Length: 132
Image (cartoon, rainbow, N blue to C red; front, side, top):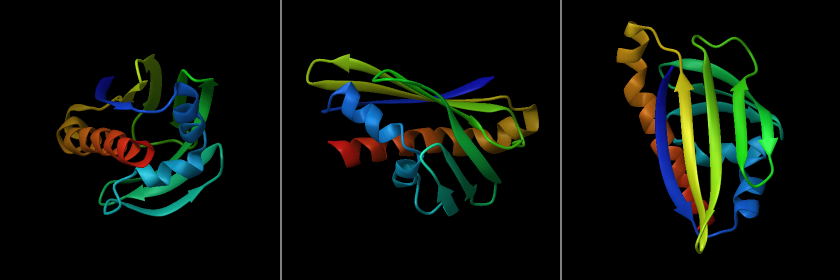
């Protein structure tokens, strides 16, 4: 598994950040607007297309209040993956770590590594802009 990580610090409590991230309907706001289409979501699941790459269906697998949200594929993806948001209370806010873990073969690693790191960075930057 290859990890694509991004961190940020939000000036809100871990409970407030968790409440936002625990609802998949809110995740559309975190996605890069130009790269995502056909978004559909509920509280627990979301499906969308990533431009020129793949269609993904994801679901929240685990919620640990004010601490962690684990997201896994709801349907068979082109490669195994897991998304995890980890929240750590810090002075004046919450440190947020977002990790996309993907099991990529050599060809997929060459094609998808850049876009997956960009996705991780965009999601944490958008979370920062929305909640700060």
